[in-house]
Image (tube, rainbow, N blue to C red; front, side, top):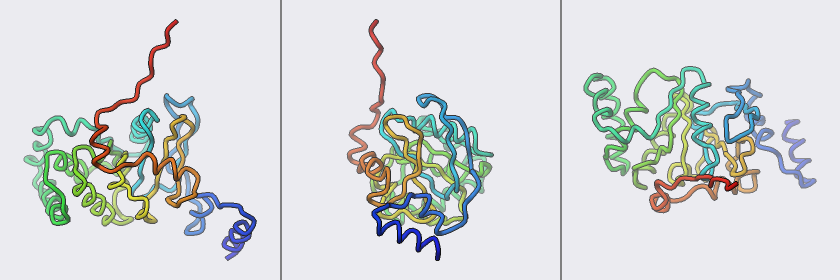
Length: 243
């Protein structure tokens, strides 16, 4: 009650509460989930992430360091695994675990049935993703560009499927630039947004509310699957300096 009164007093004076202050209203402060010095393109600044959620979205424009942050998270978090875009390159590598593990195949088939019923389109890209999602072992999974190779209907079905796992699901870190995967109007209490700014300042948590610090930057990084498909394969590069 005291916290609410203090926030109301601040609001009456025009002070906008931070995301951290809002988070503390729904639960006690948590210990640092992960902390490390940021790799290039940052300058070694310290990064700390508290309160890891069931779904953690990593957002940022091209060249902002999303993938490097994701790789360092996978290296630092206990028993974490990184699911990169190489999953899309070899169909035989995708199907081999299914042939060798009946339990895995059963889980993948069940998830695929749910997704198709929700409007998803079966594809090699979706199958490769489901194999990674359903493989047991890692306690945390970091997935590079989860929407890659999936159409809008499939992305929407996948997003709903991941949200249905609830707070007890294995934490996922999802790199995305699709507004079908990250619908800002539907972000729940078990989800978090991490923004990698274009100027390579320290990545930060962003509250999913218009007006919150970083919200507009997140919104401008997201686009519909059709728009994302037009820019697929585009990379950011730094021109060589001419001496």
